[in-house]
Length: 67
Image (cartoon, rainbow, N blue to C red; front, top):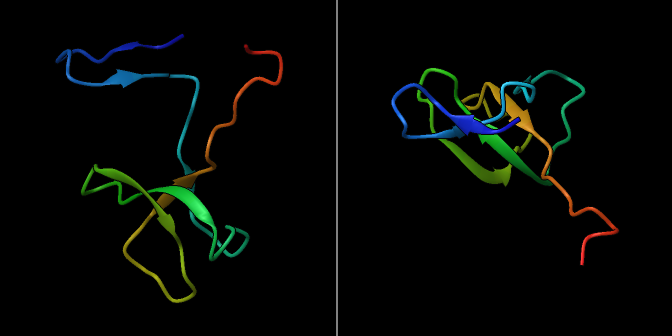
């Protein structure tokens, strides 16, 4: 369930967690990327050799039944 954080500055979903980047992380495709210490997420492609980003999440999709 989405709600606002304690500071009322971010909508969060506590059930959705960032995935640590590892050898199996997709490369060269659009992902949501974040550096945990920097705390700002963006859409981008993780390229081989990139070391800045620490976590990722796949791009969400629409429900096929949504009008």
